[in-house]
Amino acid sequence: MIKLNGGVTDKTGFFNAADPFELTEEYGSPLYVYNERILRQNCRELVGMCGYPKFKVNFSAKANSNPALMRIIREEGLLVDAMSEGEIFAELAAGFTADSILFIPNNISEKEMRFACEHGILISVDSISQLEQYASLNPMSRVAVRFNSGVGTGHHEKVITAGKNVKFGVSPENIQDVKDIIRRYNLSLAGINQHIGSLFLEKTQYLKSIDALFDIARQFDDLDFIDLGGGFGIPYHKMEGQGRLDLKDLGDSLAEKMTRFAVEYGKGLTLTVEPGRYVTAEAGLLLGAVHAVKYNGSAKYVGTDIGFNVLARPVLYDAHHDIEIYRRDNLISGKQECVNITGNICESGDILAKNRLLPEIFEGDLLGVLDAGAYGHVMSSNYNNRLRPAEILLREDKSIQLIRRRDTLEDLLRPFIML
Image 1 (tube, rainbow, N blue to C red):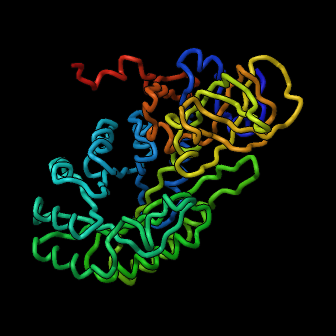
Image 2: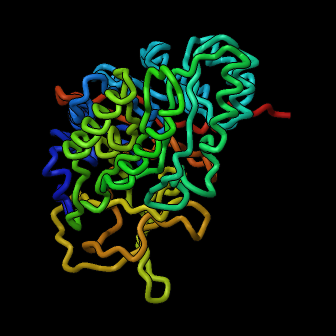
Image 3: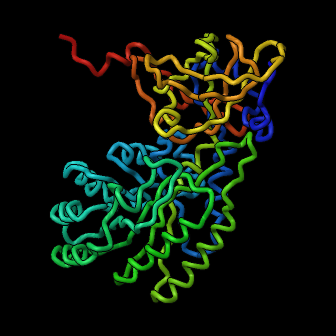
């Protein structure tokens, strides 16, 4: 086997001793592959990034909620947050205890809220109406509130989660309403949190949002924690030399700000961050097979089995993923070409990479889509009645573990009731 554009996985030792062709022969294509060593390394970097003594890291499970991976993340000392009843269920199955889960939902029913309450899980509400709903269900209890600090950032307008014209968080203008409900139902405000958006690689906006959140915190007495949210980015353009987020520099800034605020506040509050992507993205890679190569007009199309039912980010967010090429024989590509990498879904928008300059690709090649461990399999679907892929874990001891089996045709019909 030869690799083209293979510098990233060679440098990180991603595959250990595994062969991509043997993996897809055993587990099918497309296939999500995760590396345990890289996952643990990412966790340790985050846990050690900040010198503030009461610093905690909550893994945002929406990035990847595979229970086997979450079990490793828990072993590395991370806590976890949840966006749904289903994520809570998976987190409990992965061994997280109720007091290590923060439920941060958006627009949920009484039933789902009651589920969290019955399991003893702290809820952070993000509207006055949801706070009222929570208070009527669970008076004289602890609650948290998600505020919109007014500062947002993100790699795409669809992932900016604070500032104007977003659906998330309680406006600071409604602080008195929060206080009134807390007093009326004898609630205890355990903490406040925010999330400004996804995928920042420079700290300025994040630090600005923290100052805004501290202004909100000053208006409440006896908080236990302040949760700064996440959005920690990773370099998706590695092959172009894109730089990394400087975790140490960011951690030093957080420690300095929080230490100063704790003195002012008169209490050593817990400081929490919520990275999801940073934990799992680079620990995952998506393998897919090339089945067709053709021209339509002057455009060359490389047809694969990686449809947007398998990886939705490029279609949803115009997201970029670097691509490696694996070839079973030793045929060297004689040229670089500008091509469109497409999937097998019956949609014109089913494009994984548009006008991408790559070494010449042939039928029978495998593609390795890098940095697919976050917002990959969790966003997959059975659209076009395609089967969702398997997930495997390359263990530190070089063994290979299946952590989610590939869908079967029978799985497609299992939920339905035949007439």
